[in-house]
Length: 471
Image (cartoon, rainbow, N blue to C red; front, side, top):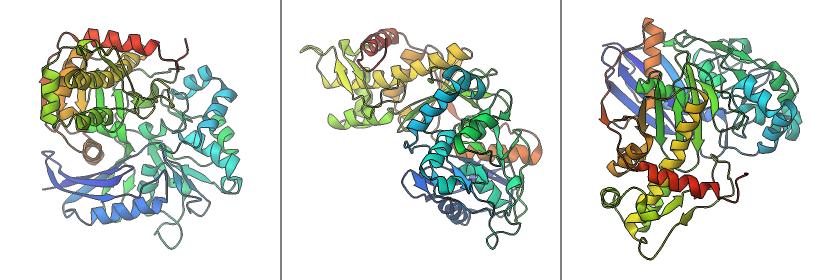
């Protein structure tokens, strides 16, 4: 029974799935925690990967691929040593440098050149921060990789002298379009690096990983496993879900994400839509919010509801929550750009002030904000025909009901799973055989419901009056 290995090297942990090559069934899995914080020594990722691989059955494995957190800055010197701990996507110290890049190139031009307006999460801004705040480190940088690039490089036998068999061959670094598109100095439309932006950020042009196609082999491991090109976490999740052109994915995790598979790239100078690439040769425009499952869970716990009780609260109330509207920006917000915002309740009266209305209202607020992301992607690329709902809160039927009320297209709800790792396994099989697997998926299909327009209208009206938004 030949198998393939899919790896998800995320912010929190390393997850490994061993998958049957023919059926797509998961035959073995394991997880190892990563250190916390917003900067991490990449050696911790390597150690976790080795430990996790040692706890799964790889006896029949023939190929491996890695999906990983995007944007993280892995800076290497000429000897292949990591110059300083990697700055991760959630490290916001480079927000001023994001503004400097926009000021240097102009917001319209930088969006056209890279598909995105840089944020503090992007690699380009972290390089600029390094140059300005740690020039002694910036001057040593000979190559810049992303987390999955560096892990693949190590798996192929490269690294510093003494820790690897092939030594520090920096020009052997490889990546893929999906991960490169999150750096802030790569164009998914032209598949080229933007030397002007990366040189402005770092002060010189470092070696950057060669960009592989979606089914190209990156090489082999010491065990003889074929390596796929790997990719960014959202692109790998899309691959794991079996998304097609016209699909949009809405993820309700700690934060919220909306991304779609499209045949045309996005160039949104407002910064709402990031113009990323997917793992199949298409594009993956993406919108991210800070608030998703956590505000819902906070209100659920406030009223002492079980998750079944939350569903009952939704089912016992009507769309619009009796006129109550919640802006669920409990942790500030990224989309819209309201970092100092707080959550707020609107339209409350003695008549509609009930636990059920407030519970439904916070769910409606979260979904309405993400639905704005669906609309933004559609306005810059193409209209979606199906929404795939994933994430921890996606399995709740009350949440599902609100989604079907607001999005106006069929909703598919796959069973819960590790879709980044599963997408990496699918890519590994693709690289091994030359054909993308058509493994069967298990998902429920929900039809659109009426009534959600009222909640959307209420939310949009309250949001327009928010003091932190420009006219």
